[in-house]
Image (tube, rainbow, N blue to C red; front, side):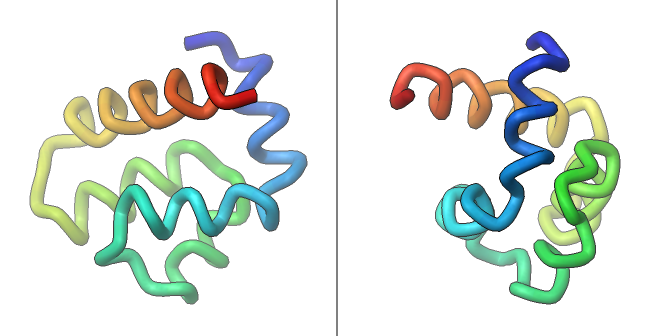
Length: 72
């Protein structure tokens, strides 16, 4: 997944927070705020909250991004 689209997500994090909450409902609002658009932070939070490997968290983020792109 290209970094270009992630840059869009990061730059508009407040707009994407709801989508993050829908995708990973176990993340708290505070955790999502802490991420502040940083992909590695999001990977870590997902990994921690869901008890999965970082690679799996990264794959989930890639899928989420691909889905977002198709909706735009």
